[in-house]
Amino acid sequence: MNAATASHFGQGQAFSALPVSKGKLRILENTRKVGLLWELSPGEGRLGPSYLLGTMHVRDQRAFGAFERATALLQECEVLALELDLGGPQAGRPEVPGGPALRALVSPGKLSRLAQAFSKQLGVDLNSVAHWPPSLVANWLQLQLLEEEQPLALDEALYEAAREMGKPVIGLESLGEQLEVMQRIPPAGSLQSILGLGRNLKAHRRAMRKMAESYAREDLPRLHRQAKRSIGGMRPLMLYDRNARMAQRLAAHASGQRVFAAVGAGHLWGGKGMLRHLKHLGYSIRPLP
Image 1 (cartoon, rainbow, N blue to C red):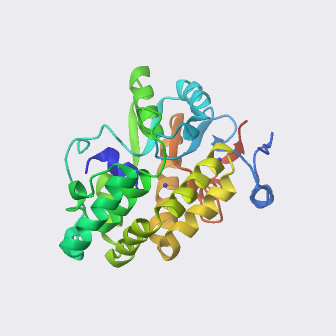
Image 2: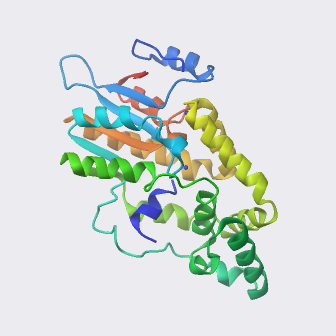
């Protein structure tokens, strides 16, 4: 697994013209659509605003509706912040989190049947990733359920845009931190997810397409609910703890320079989302059209 693969682990218009207070944030949480792109202001008389975009880590065209707006705002900023620096020193290193591999947890016959099913329905080779732990395999399979109309996933496209602009890229998490999270995901639950995909691929594909449609509508509250449902009891590990860590680091970086940040949309919303954390850290926030 390389850094780009790890960045996929993590994963759409009522807009306010005023900074969002704590009370207004509660009100907006009851609306259906609030947008994916947010302005973060550190305070009067200081730097200009930074920005935060909720992304999907996919190549589906529906994830690229805000790309032109995003790159225009990126041009105004000094640095791009992603969940993971895709050009970091570990970017080209094949590295897999520890724990039992998929092939060690299922019989050769079951693995062969799963591989045949996924090859037929998704056109992918499960055997090529059977040395990965189930958490990573399950995530990789989920990403195959959407179309691949763009040459790069949205985060990777933003990374390449920043490179063309000559802007540095930073990670709000390290590859080691993301691998540590994966190591803590119980393999039994991930294995059941893989088996469930094999049994009812059409239902899972419909669910992923609904998520992509919510993203295309910029329906951030719905995306947040879908993300929470998809990970169940793993919310503290996969969402809440990471939200707090990434918000703190983004706030620190944005205190001395203008930052364009892009993280999975599921991390932004809710009482423990990055927007709430940034508000508590002293930033005024407002959604952008």
